[in-house]
Length: 256
Length: 332
Image (cartoon, rainbow over all chains, first blue to last red; front, side):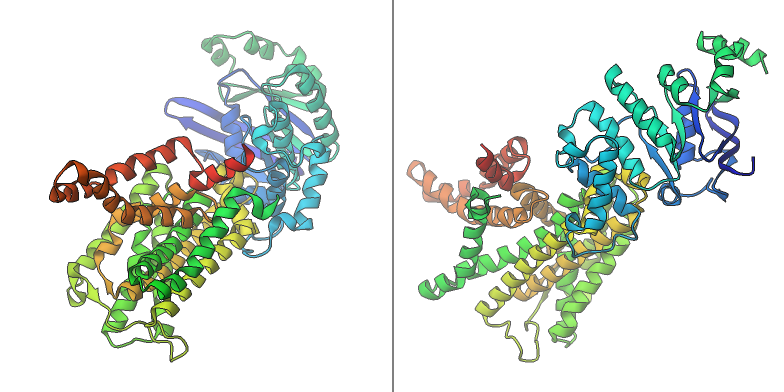
């Protein structure tokens, strides 16, 4: 697995007595859509935090495209091409949709110590931003203030923000959270299209979406990887079924 | 976007016209006090505009911004005291010293957020304030008289009050223009993005700290220049200029006028300082039919009883300050 785009080795993080990441090892080769599922409290959010740089692991190593990124600050990881979306919508509400995406484009077009020219008139920022908005189906909403967009549109914009940084890999933190079935279906279509161009790590509760999209699925329970396989194998896995039916602690522990 | 016909733009245009005509009025009436008052207003509006850059656009609530007024003022005062009266030296030193202090304060305080940020900027300002009190050679807490205004090799005569007023006004307009360019540039969008959602800014790849720090330094430098003007204007500099209540005044100007609006700080500065002058005589006038003159004069000392609730109302009911109210007139 030397050609893995994202390689996680022996990642461990403790919060007091709770082991949020328990010796996680995971390889995501380029071009794969890798889904991570697990019951609440499984450590999915911690894992995303460790990958994006918001949480420092106690031990272990994360490498991206061959570079060790374990200790890199958040913005450097984005610069390397590792983009994320947020579970709880995290945008710039007092900017328009286009401003939001253009800012993400700007982040990846050199430094921003430009003090004089009107950035909203720079075609090199606005045009790529418009293209990304079109890609997620928000072309018509470009000039609307984000505060006035619907929840579903916010979720689409979340993806657009990540895409606008021209990433090699997307970390999607529950992109379908709080969506209507209709909106979810649209998001699945968006992701299906993205999957052809990008490597994706998808954390999602919507099982239908996960099994429809994923090439591989990793199941996390109490910070530990209990299974990592193709969707069909995961569906048939007895341990996974048990975990999702709510196995008591002892049983999960007893399996080791 | 029907430009000048919006009420807000009319008010701003009227205000700028009025400011441009102050010396004319003074020349006609001989009311020199008005010139003194409005020179002060223009200088403090410049300081408030610089504060708005970090407070309004950057979301950095600095509670120690007056310290740069003091540093700029002391740069002029101390150099003049030591015999260096050239403005070509004094003003760059005022700007440079303020920028340097802002760099130090910002580097340490911008790692914190919210109340901690406010407290650290306040603490630094108090530190410098007491440093000023301890400057025995330069008058300690009595302050330092600046006997001679900055000399510009005969190019411009600052001792001429009209010339000085117009220079201050030009610098204020220049500052507002600079802020306008800044906030719409790439740099300005990063600053405003970091105010709105710093976490997202980092996630999309911005090292926001260095941009916010740069913004903090720019604001400090502009305020340092305003301090140099202030020392020239009053012919005096003392630690009181840096007192935290002065920083509070600057915040009031920005919030009252309208945060993150170009002309808000100017509107706020004019409103606050004109009310400061008008309210005491107004109260005395209204009170005198009901009591003795001496009593009415004493009542007038409590003019802030009127100003306080006024400020409270603006904060509570007009989040965009006076500027925001004027803008909503157009929409409503």
